[in-house]
Image (cartoon, rainbow, N blue to C red; front, side, top):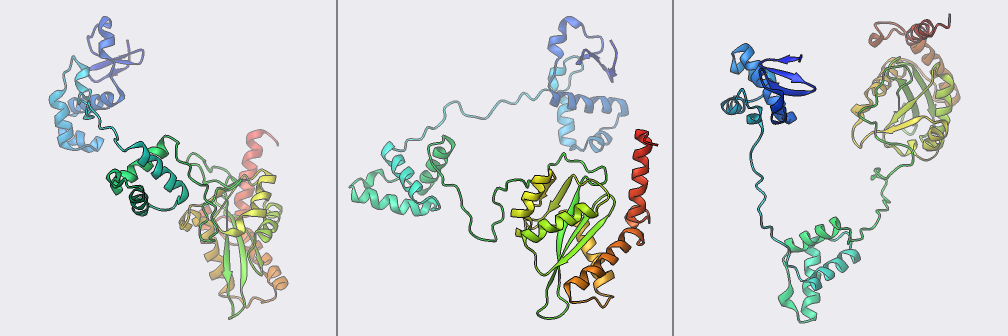
Length: 354
């Protein structure tokens, strides 16, 4: 045997007391919760300090000392939670008459967005017309009946067809929330895209599309007269053309300009599209910081043209400065171009291309 844990030992993954016999091994198998409590005891007997143990494991003294009193060195089962379920043996079953349940189901399917209070008024009138007022149930009973019908699949709820532009949480064909386990390690793993409103004078609005790779801080910017899905798809073409690396995923907010044609183009090109939850621009903080940079260091200090074609030329020069001249503090004061070149050289050395 090997793998000593304090006063206990491991044998084939099982924890047994030191000196315990293998014939009693089955009695020493404990749950993961009990194993956690066992680590408390081992740490306590090693340090001899209960308060230090509580701070180390982030548990309250009451919890620790309760299990310390229960702990028996030769009986690891003493660390198991032996509390019995408080669920009553005899459960109350619904006694709502079948006729009333059917009426509630019918009313709910007829008026699917009406709550239990409104349905109570309608049910009361129907039962009164039929002379069955004695069958009337409470508002709470109507709510519970609706929940039971939903859980059992007896209630048909309509598929919501949102028509308001403010409700942007419709199921999308390609865009999804960024999975928690999606890791961004290399250049191109995630590029954030956003728009920036430019209002130089009253009555004139320009829409800038900004993309930033969150690893290399490589920016691509383009300006249009407005922000539509068609123009966003056009910007995607420019983004792919002007990035010296493969784009694997793009993250956008829920704006309408990043739906329709833009989403279709991402799907066609095999680029993952992640959409942010509503009201969470902080999750796109990298491109939000890029927009601030372009605002403060280009628009606010330069006499830029109001003509779209001329402004695009000016922005291309500024974009080149951002990539090849402007040191980035996030890159240890390298330029994005220098950083990309270093990463490419590392890849060549790793794969023995040179």
